[in-house]
Length: 423
Image 1 (cartoon, rainbow, N blue to C red):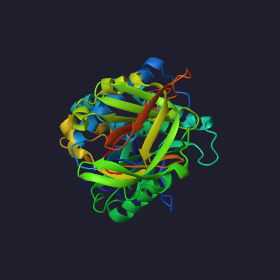
Image 2 (image 1 turned 30 degrees about the vertical axis):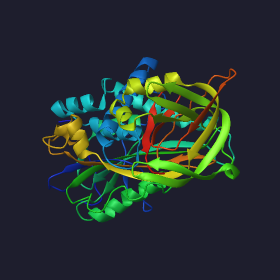
Image 3 (image 1 turned 45 degrees about the vertical axis):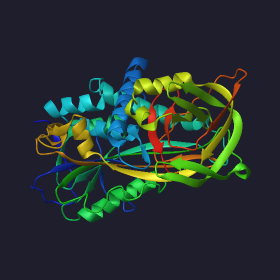
Image 4 (image 1 turned 180 degrees about the horizontal axis):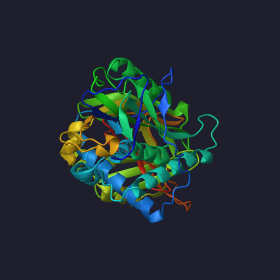
């Protein structure tokens, strides 16, 4: 058996049935529980080719549209970070074997072999961390950061190769908690870590009852983004406007501007792109002619068609101010997408050398808020700058439901994906 590390607060060994609980989020405990770390340091310059990074991003985009297809039937607003979910599941995938490993790879579109997959995710994370240097706004300084942490049961043994992978590629150590003796206190510690990492935008990621005495491992990822628009809206131009929701018209504060922005028209949609300070990330907004039809057909090819349609226009833009959060429980959805064995009959023997672990739930929550100054999201963003040639004129009034996403322009990574039906 591969050597393992036993994590202990005391001298007792726990022997009850272990269960794996996987999450996507962030935060820090004020009491800072003890941490067990691999002897290996994080690789800050992973050897990843451009082709491998492109393959990772393509897979993540395919997963994002697959997941959107599964959750779009729920009423109301949607917002999630496919990047955060993929990262947290990739950390879990490091311990998967056999059928569980194969199903997770197929569902998550993990086409790169290990450890190339983990190295590529690390490279993408390092690329995103470098985007902050491009911002120059004093009103809303550019922030984009991610954080990973794992939380393990006191006295439980985790295999060293698993801990090595998380340390080298994700910069994550294992923080020791006693889920058996104090499940709710452990939940509060993790929620506190999440809140700290997301500037208090993601609160209570783990609801009451989600951590039990059977929990053995919690893997967390957090992503936070805040940036000014490259072309801020003037607050004096904001006025009440009408937005048509699925249940009727409502009045909402609506921002207005005329600026050179990305604008495109394609089969069944119109789109706009709003770059953020520094030009490395942008928000792409899509207004479909028929929302349900567009959502049903959403795919990586659809997203690429939207991006390909974007040119530069002297755009008269009307955009509602909005702010909301959106929790998701993904266990049943992921099982239906093709990885049921991760939850029932799992093989995570790469984590602890046994086949006793299984994913109990996958919990996710996203936050998005936009105003005249810019955007804040508990996730990341993508900015795209258009052609500087003389633009045509266009008008786009966002007065009915629309889709939007935030992507990193240099890599094409899709960091957030959402829908606004009711501002």
